[in-house]
Image (cartoon, rainbow, N blue to C red; front, side):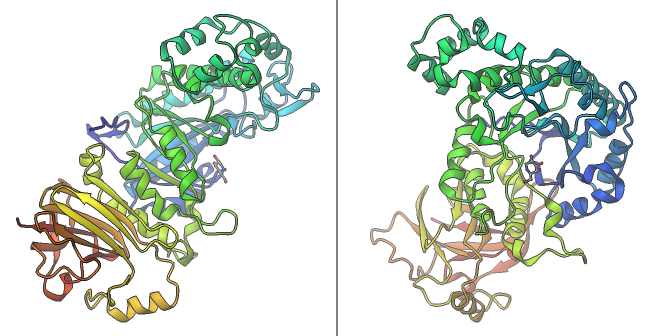
Length: 526
Ligand code: DGJ
């Protein structure tokens, strides 16, 4: 049993945020954001991630304008969805794109990152107190405004503080303050944190460099000194900003990061950002192995897995595996919320979904159907992912009391008879025309004889373990011990409501699921 820290709470109950991130400019005006809100609703999502930019809310120093926030609150309430606001300020990746002009143009007061040759980069230095104070002041004003405008309705369920903070090209800042720190003593707080942890990647780097109890960054961390120094500074900077905001409006706050910059020094971020509820990797990895390794890295006792960003489709021109490996993030790594970037792009002019995104759209709709089960069973070992990787024909499961076999497509069995909505010729057509509808979804074993299935293009065969003869998969299991097989949905109170009942030929070829079936409940008898 894994204790899942439900960071997001709505109306006093755990909440599972699901949706997409709007394009970066969409939060600027009312009409810009319309498509993003529509897309969340059509996806059956419940939350939109959208940016609030420092340059827009404080165009002149000390003069605040939260018109854009009012527009987002009003629209979210009209659509009946929640918001996660993204604070684009000091960092937008390794740049200061969204800092105000009066910050960008005053480089004497607001120090930039310097390259090794001393060139000013288009980025603010985390070593500069003036940068921190200015960002913190604006963020505090933003949070105060939310406190006044949203304490009662709680439309904004969380804030992402900054966006993918990092240093592009160089590993750190080479300005005078940074150089002095780099050649100065590593803070005792960091050394004590490593001693207390006694394990982890930062600890290992320290030990490999000799495990000195004091010294400069290069003396304690060798070749990783620069990355650890910038991590220490970014972590303390963002924690400072988040803490100031929480002091006036205490809602969940998190960081999103570009994984390739952070995997080694993640511990430093976790140890020194107590005001940051979790750190979420922007997981754009198209292949299942790398995708899952990131999920494993960020799913920690001190850090629930949340994906602030992922990819909606092709990355290098190829297909992404995400529409089906996302189910492994949910089942195997206890994902507490899922978003993909650029939600507007899945919509056509007439408000329908673009065909190339049908797999992702159907996957998110399937997740939305089973949120009550996710909140109940994540961490219990009762959720099993179905994810058809390349050339995969089936998956086997060892359930309580049953051997399970998931068959993808028609497999070796003849085209499975489903029902008038999914006739065998549909299956044959898909088989012959290389349907890109990968088998995917989730299986919940709520109790020994009660299963819930959701997803697409797979069938589950169950064989009671009591019988001595092994299941001759994938031939249909004759006389399956089903008491009922029902399609349905969960109502507002989390109760299962039957929409259609199956029996006879519709259950002889395994329990099949497609996105338009909703949730399929199977009750068996001993
Ligand atoms: C990563 C950023 O965090 C997102 O806001 C967006 O700009 C994507 N890159 C675009 O690929």
